[in-house]
Amino acid sequence: MKVRCFGIAREIIGSDELIVDPNAAQSVEELRKLIIQTYPEFEKYSSFMISVDFEYAKDSFQLTGKEEIAIIPPVSGG
Amino acid sequence: MKVRCFGIAREIIGSDELIVDPNAAQSVEELRKLIIQTYPEFEKYSSFMISVDFEYAKDSFQLTGKEEIAIIPPVSGG
Amino acid sequence: MVDKLNTVLITEEPLSVESLYQQVQVPEAGGNCLFVGTVRNENKGKTVTHLEFESYIPMALKEMDKIAQSAQNKFELQLCAIGHRVGTCKLGEIAVIIACSSKHRKQAFEACQFAIDELKKHVPIWKKEFLQDGSYWVNSRP
Amino acid sequence: MVDKLNTVLITEEPLSVESLYQQVQVPEAGGNCLFVGTVRNENKGKTVTHLEFESYIPMALKEMDKIAQSAQNKFELQLCAIGHRVGTCKLGEIAVIIACSSKHRKQAFEACQFAIDELKKHVPIWKKEFLQDGSYWVNSRP
Image (cartoon, rainbow over all chains, first blue to last red; front, side):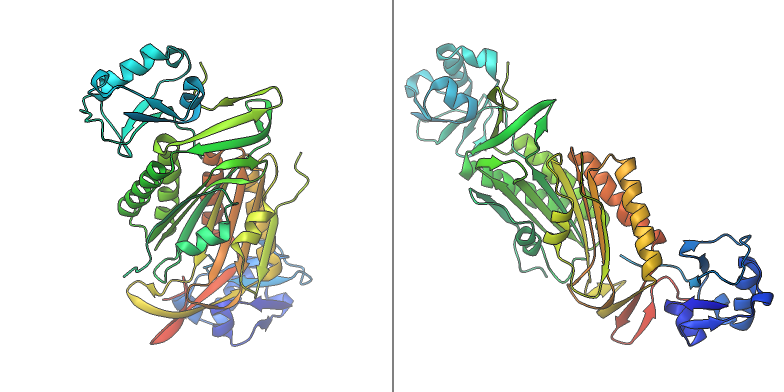
């Protein structure tokens, strides 16, 4: 499953897309833990939200692997 | 002494300028009374301020007859 | 240092939002708030056909300048611009524009509200509203 | 009845104050408030050289649309338009414009403040600030 990366997340991960094994992240919570485990810099630099199909998703959200997923670091528009 | 008239004042007085004997209005208060006496419609239609040299003037302001004077009905710009 | 000055203007020509916005632009400003008052097609349930504005222009400009300066000092604005239309205003046309620039947005919003409130209270401009069944000077009815 | 819709846009081209203002014009509106966020030359005492904005555009447009609708309902607006720039923004350029039209000015002001506050909290847009001695993503520093 593909995870889109923006802003500081793109820079930490070094790519605008992260490929994740869908079995290793069956919920948003699991995906979040996996990302922090793989890229500990997130703990230092930035908290983040996860979006699923263009909406902010709760940790309890169950993923099928077919959604469009993105890492949303703290926004700073305006 | 000339008194400029705007808005409803211009319509009540029927002219954009009122000529007043300077001896009959030596203060803003006297001028105000004279105007209401001469044009009682002011009591019915509108309260008004007097400006002297482009500033709102208090009733106690003493007039020499050389100032630029105007009747300022309630404003409604914007 | 700001080397531009506040702008106040009264005109018989249509007012331009873009132009008033440009008047308050300085490199120090990050938050800009504009109020634009337009001629609405209705007031208190009656259909409005158009408006006419009359002004004691030299005094009005003096009062507008005081408001701009006072907004600038009170809210630490960079600049304030105030423009008002006189003459006949058709439906949808702009009667008044206030533009305020500030470092931060909060002050720009507050200053802009302050300036339009003050303008409506103190600036010698008079609005005649034309309805389908007559006309009257706003604020001067019995 | 309003037959125009709220406008939301994200663009690499310069934003136009006049254009966003026009987007919210309807005959029923008398009070229009615009917020224009521009690139300031300084932040927290440091000289800013320019900004870069990145966005997750489809999600950002969705969030902007929610904000516009919510402002419209909450404050009985006629219309709300929200535009945001992406890419490189030079000093003085416009990063964001919010335009709100209402019958009366109070609601236009309140809605405009609400919309810019919400945008800064929820819309997936990221600002990278370039200073003379480096750059960083705003809100994401350690």
